[in-house]
Length: 380
Length: 231
Image (cartoon, rainbow over all chains, first blue to last red; front, side, top):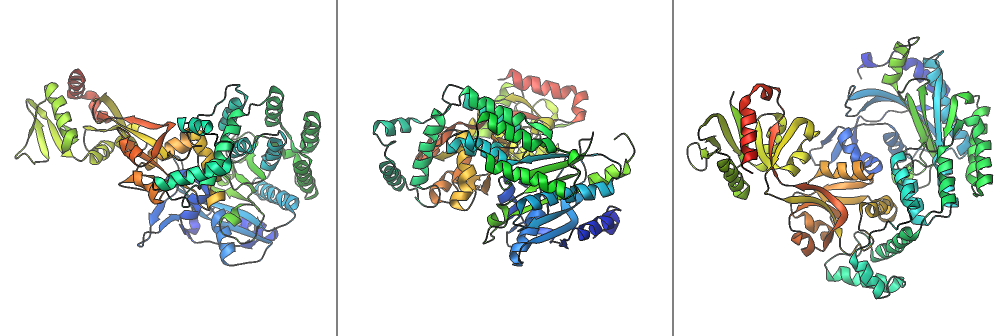
């Protein structure tokens, strides 16, 4: 490890992590590429450094730590709860800046008290940044995917629409596009002429007949009925799509959703505002809100400076393994994200863990923190 | 300065390109025998012709090793990141038409748009334990179209260098991104193009590498003007 490249504060940072009751882990720099592409999507391919082993296995230079730390946890069959800390180099293709830089962070796996674990992740991230940057005012942005999901569900949309909207959470452009589509009184679905024929034959009302018909056609055309989407998958989604096409949001519900997405306020005021919003709009979202409320309470109890945190209802990350809390930390008045994190309760199962392991964590961009330390006191 | 133009080394692309050059008053003659990979242009002493394969041509233009080339737009856009910053499409030549398209099994009655495909992709892992697999040789175009234009992230590309249309039936992928001119191969394999699934309408193009020295060379403008006049 080229120690000379390490930020000067690396030692102090690791000492902080130790005080935060974590176990330091390291992972190989060369990683199998599959899990990263599988979790983050194909788009990641052009942002990581890939190569192949002699036997043709796709390998990459570690682009981040969360996935390797989780895989290592599963492979070593360590019990939970477990708090891991890491500090090391990661490698990404970037237009600006070096392709290799340091990241550090904490992954908290298996803590059943999610409010407490969430609060601890946010609090720890704020603490280590405050220790590096004394006198600088931090700005924390916090979002919660599960509150958004609860609002969508309570609006009574069909499952297909809920999935679309949830999938777009964190991608404001896509989300606005979907809402506009939902509000458009014209049906947006495009159906092939085959579907018209099925309708005339009366198959759209009769799932069993439709499934049998699809299976028969697949066999006749040389398609296997079990390697890809099955006849039943297709039949069910077709029904879902017909529902999607026929669902139009009434103005009131659309206004409620839009109002929710514009919520942006100090975290301390957020629980009251959310309960108020639920009461006014008549949405049944108490379960999600009480978790939210418990997290805010846990943050206060943990002694975090809650005045630095803002809740933004539309804030999320468009990755399908984030499930609840998401947050980012900057210095007030600057644009560089110094820390980012969130809850990823689905990730360990996706990576092959046999039991459900709730997880939350954050990572720090050490190069950006170093830059902030160097310009301390300056305007930037 | 000598200007090098790369032309397709064989087939219809070569013949059609040569015909346009001849109409442009730039008759191409092979240097040495007929099979030679070098050529010159009658009466244009400062112009050299390099006969290369179509995919090599897009690469050589990208690196600036040649000044001009005739090749398919699909190959340029697939081969080069930031294609428009690195090359100029001087003229569309009216042959070699082919569309790069997203095609899914006909039997997917519920999928006719990219939005439908996005729904299917989002659910795929939960239902099948793996991501939706796309067979293609167009990695870059697929990524740009799926991720950039349609917000679809959750899929995997399975590299396919030939007989891509057969991948869904054989089970090696779920859908394809491929080039098609008449659509008949897709039909024969029971695939359909999504209504908004045309990624690129490609044809043979006369392409210039954006090189700074071209600005001072009147020959560059003369070549472009001659080719355009021949269309």
